[in-house]
Length: 378
Image (cartoon, rainbow, N blue to C red; front, side, top):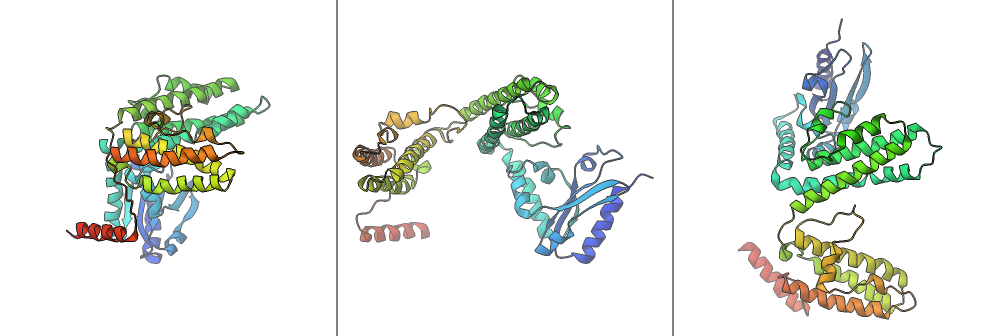
């Protein structure tokens, strides 16, 4: 006789109601039974959200009639991460079926997670998901590095393992580019992948090579090309979401904070501290260039490209090149360039309408605080 998995769930729910009535907020299931695609060997994919630390004790893994079950806990924090597309298992929250809800408050909290998922799929959050896609794609490069460093003695298992990591991470990046999530696990989601409106032209061919080829060189080449094509697609989409320049809101408080780093460089130069000057000068120029790019476009430069086009705004403004003046035996020129940068950056931001909180004395600062409080209460 075929096992009725919902009899298993009923047994677990009775156990929870008797032993953990205040400790578990939500019990739900997802996967094949939730989607109506279960087979005779399918388990019921449970999860629960604990309400207390004791609730975690309800976690259990077991077999009945040779079918495996995993009753596993998801914290509210991880559920929120899934709902915010920071965790690839968004479908668990979006598409699960609820079996048990401890209270109305727990139910409302869970439904707000689904509202979050819907919100992230609205046009106003597209750029946010593109940036998450960039982060996901960035994690691919360690696996490409390992594939490139491998020698011919590595067996096919190594290549396929690393290629698997490349493929799954790139596909997750593509899902985010398309402002969606996978509703099925890998191996069962190919139809959804190939229906993505935005995807590399040769995606299906790359996937076939990565999964079927036994030629190491071909696997590596497919991984590299898939990653490169996805990066080009990502950059193209980010450029479409460039906004008009807006300095006052995007650079509010920026100069005040960055001034501390620039002062640190000046002090390092005076003390002939090359190591501090080295790290701080490169960091300062990179940070200022990135913020100017953000002020102009409304999004941050892509860290995955091999060029530094975002530095063009820094150069166009005429700000000094700090990095080229890093000379260990003589830091006087770097010091002069940083002092010039402080003045030029201050003036440039003021011409762009950025308000900089600068005071000559404490009395001026006190007046500012009183005026600020008056504006707040009015």
